[in-house]
Image (cartoon, rainbow over all chains, first blue to last red; front, top):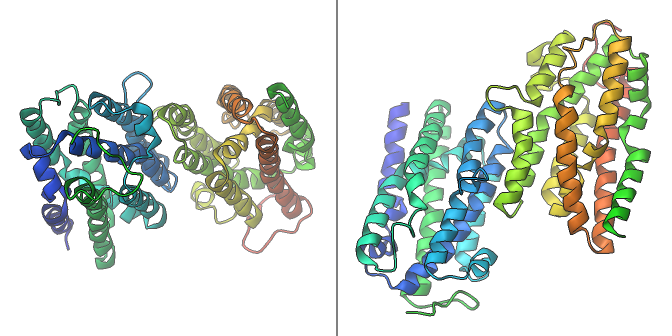
Length: 239
Length: 239
């Protein structure tokens, strides 16, 4: 494949497998979720958010040059903040606050679904153990995130009276951060995936990462739409 | 132990086991090393330097809060630079440059002693696998570094005509960075090492780290003072 053919193949994976296609997401922006279901989403998604710096630092630990590490370091700043502007994790906690979830309970991650935990930990393990090229490729779901964010924010504001633009402030900076990050990672992959084997690895890494996100949606659906909440997991106080 | 007794016990370990006590260091600042021996030191020490961001990012990946990760992140900046001011690794390469070592050869780390590699990798593994408290405690050798730096810089400038203050520019920022970092880590350990078991863990972590540094000095001594250079390792072109 040429680099542009590789990009097209990556975009085809996103079109098929990104979690914007998941029925839980469609219900969310369509206004068909209950408040309790949205609370469960926010609670579980916190575990993903708060582990992103661990994932990124795991990759930085493996990158061989100051240039690469410095480029990737901006992600730590985005998620952990700079001490003045809040980072993504702090902004996510504003979202869970505004939904009425107890902050200590959220941070404890006691109530999350086991599948959320397993999926997020698999992502960190992947980034630790696979090739650097594959680890970078696993971030490429960010190529598709502006669309899902736009759908989510617009749909949630239109459909849920307990959600305000302040609730969703997490997403605004992501609309510029994610495309910048995705561009860097995509260029890296297009430049470094030269052999067929490397290109297949990059495509497999993106499929893997789509699965990480998809599994989290599946788990929410099973527990909070189908109603099979596993022992110990969060039980919404409202339906 | 009270927190202050713990600090005193840590300082006692440094007084006994820090590599400022090693005969290779004493020869270095005493002017009794050959140029070849100093080249070997700079070459091997590069492997330690260039792995420090990997060590620090490994720890950041495990730290649970944005505050802690942000505090530790400054070490990445110190070693990798900010894109304008060179970091510690780039400054170390100026040192090896000025000693006439080929930069590509240095960066390849092909010529380092196996013991250097094993010691440095043990440090990263320790930080990955031990408790966060112990991982932080393993950085506490920085409590003792201003003294060794002062001895080294003064002794080397006085005794070797191939060493200038420009050669040793690596060390100047470290005189302020290391004490700041050490203060943060020491305070963390004094606050979090409450039980006897935790305190013993902290003391053991500092002993371990002193060993990491000491082993590197021992290896240099064996290869370049005693003259048992292992196969494939750097052979100085001058004595």
